[in-house]
Image 1 (cartoon, rainbow, N blue to C red):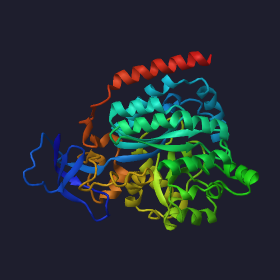
Image 2: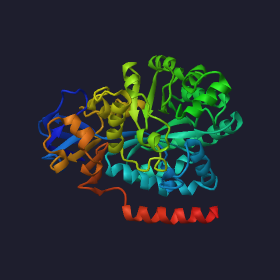
Image 3: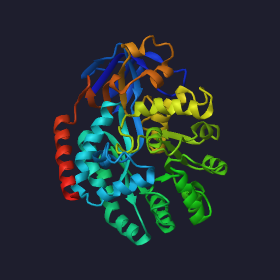
Image 4: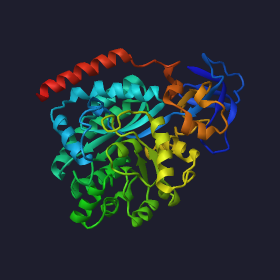
Length: 430
C-alpha cells in the first residue's frame, strides 16, 4: 500500500528550526519521501492535509491499560499508597480474560488522541497483546514482577517465552520489557533477576521509582539510600531502562541518572491527582537526563490523553521553577515523541518523521479558533492543541483513524464489552 499525504505543514521533530510545507510519501510501513515526492511514486491512497500539521505519532511511555476499569474509582483517598490498597483489592479478583476489553478501549482512547506507541506493565500481558495486534498500534509490553525471587523466577519461566513468541509474530508491533513493579513491592533479588533477564534477552527494564516522599523515606530506612540510587546499586545502569515518575530525586541522583542509559518518564497528571508532587524536569534537562512522557493508568489520571500531559508538563515546569521558559515547548513536545521512542528502544523506527523510518504519523487540524493565529508552531502544539484536533493517525503505514473515525477498532462494541466486563468484576467483588 502506497499512501501520499499532500499539502501538510510538516513538523518532523528533528530540530526546532525544521517546519515546512510539503508532502509525505509512504510505501508500505516506511516513509520514502518527506517534503518532496520521489519520482514515479504512484499512490494507492492520497490524503489532502491542507490546513493540517503532520507530527510524529505520540509515544505514551508509561501506562497500565487494564486499569481502565478503575477510571474514576476510589478517587477520595489521601495518597498513592492508600489508593493502591483500594485498587489492589479489586486487582486480586481479576483474571486473564479481563485484560483484553480494558486494553482495547484504552488503545482506542490513545489512538483518537494521537498516540501510536505505548509502554504497558500489568499482571496479565497476553490480553493487552491481543488488543495491540487487533488495533495495529505499537507497544512495549512489560512482564510485570512482584514480590520475591521464587515467584518472579517462576513468572519469567512461564510467561517470558509466551511474550517472546507474540513479539516474533507481531511484525514489529510488540516488543517486550521486564517490569519489576517498584522498590516497595519487589525484593533486591527480584530486581537483580529482572536486570539479568533483560541483559540476557536484549530488552529493557521498566519500573516505578521515587513516586512519593513516603517511598523515598521508606527506601532510605530499609536500604540506606533513596530509590534511584538503590536501583543503581543493584545494577540497573548495566541495562537500558526507563523509570516512571522520579518525582523526588536527591541531588546526587541527578548525576547518577546522567551517566546511565536510563530515561525518566514524567507522568504529570497522575502525580498531581495523587498529590505525589512535581517532577523536576528542568533539572533533569540541565543534567542531560533523557525524558519521556506518560499518562500512567486511566485509574490515576483519569484519561490516556497525551496532549493533556504535554500541556500540563509545560505548565508545571513553569510553576515549579518560576521560569516560564525553563523547559521550552519544543523540548516538551520532544519528550512525547522522540523521548518516548528512545525510552522504548524504538528511536530508529519512530519518534521523528524521517525518510527510512516507520510512517507513524498524526495529522492535526489547525483551522480552528484555538489554534489561530499560528504564530509559534511549538507553543501552539503545546499550549493550544487539543487531542480532538487529531484527525488522522497512521502507525507503520496502517491507517488507525481517518477523519476522526477509528479504522481498526469498533468503538461501540469495545464500550459495550468493557461495561459488561466491569459489571462482572463488581459482581465477583461482592
